[in-house]
Length: 617
Image 1 (cartoon, one colour):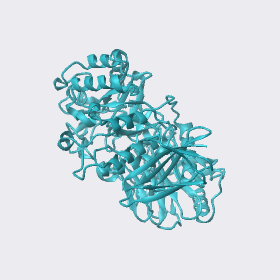
Image 2 (cartoon, rainbow, N blue to C red):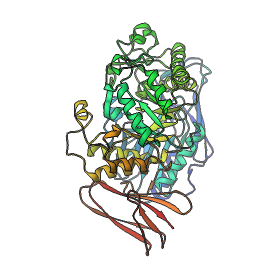
Image 3 (cartoon, rainbow, N blue to C red):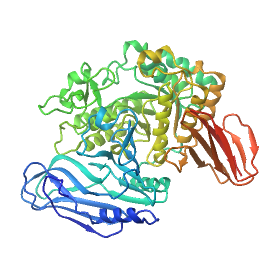
Image 4 (tube, rainbow, N blue to C red):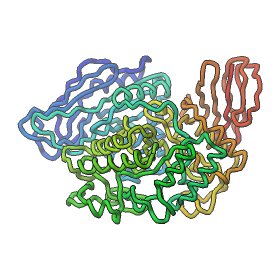
């Protein structure tokens, strides 16, 4: 590992099992697993510190490695990274990959030679999160799909103190923990995040095993079903008023009682950061409209961006000491190290390690839960709670711990309410949220329908296991003047009926939350019927055998199955699916049904469209 510049310390691996999946790897896969098992990891220290006495101890068990770092020397050491391995992988450069990003708005696809961004806000560009030189870097998970042999997942299966990252290029792999230059005192011990090498015959098998391992380390009991509801954002944006809420509440009461939650999104508050103060433009008291929602038989839901505040907010003016600091000890302006925020920027970041911040967050959410009656919280801009490049009140804490301590304070105040993470750090949120947005923002454009669809289907393995996946909103009305004014919608061709059908099918295939984002009274009758069809989510994400997400299937009982056939391209395609002989196939939308005599069914799918079918034996 000659490319690493700092000192080498010893690592003792105990045990030898490395293949977590029941299937055995062979060929290049087997050699890679063996290399990882035998690798000599390194601890990278800051500056020219003495490494003597700094030891990492660990053990492999059933393909999962658990370890710790111990400082047995007489002096404190500042540790930048702990590198589990850095080696030649021996895989073809065209091996396909799927990797998670630090934050929710992007993923990594493509190949080892030519990685591609899925999503419009990559870590390294939009948020300027540093990466290991010479590598594209995934956070938490990198999955490899060799043309021959087993699917391999390299995964950090816990995230309590450090973020685990996996760098790759066409020749090399590097797995490491970012320790942020923190000091480890004499006799000090850090428990390290668990790491796994998981192999199997298919993507679904492997990622299911990753989810199982994560559940053991960061458990979170989930509600029995994913929520359904209505959200104000994609029609009214930050200009939402009490009347907008009441109008859609009344429509829901008469026509859509299936939508359990009525969510008031960004725009009700006076300033970013002052969540208990209602803005004048909202046109009324927030508590009154929440009470109306309850009286109409629905559950009140609300949007909060708990970690951030604008400069003119009361909380920032009164408590500048509560915020993450820059190197000069001033509140960190987030725009100086990455994206500074989408409204009322630049944003400043509440420090989750500060005891007074923890009390404040608990009090805000307790007020909303117990006095306002809120039973669903959409937490947005959560990424900022784990922002890099800052200094915390507790100098021994990582940014992951700062985020998790802040989130735990909110959970304590929110009680039994449903917590949704949005624009969140993915792995740092493990075990802390009931739902997670699993794509970027939807918009009334084909590009958004396609990108959000693929992003969500890529994360379908997380649904019902790590959290309930949130596609973002279901959009079934055409573009309006408000969309154009906000800049959220690309200036491209009007959406076709087929494109709306694909968008709806991806939400059904995702199996998670369903929230309408339309002004409900503007829905055409046939679109209202689609919304009603989707308002009882299955809770099960479809599985896909191919990395292009063309054919998805999910069992909904012993004799029922649902199948989705996608065409993301610009030309018609025919999809053929094997089925049990004598099955009855029913179109999900129209209810039209036919008995299939053979053992397969073929459907021609138009461009930018999808077919959705129910199958019964």
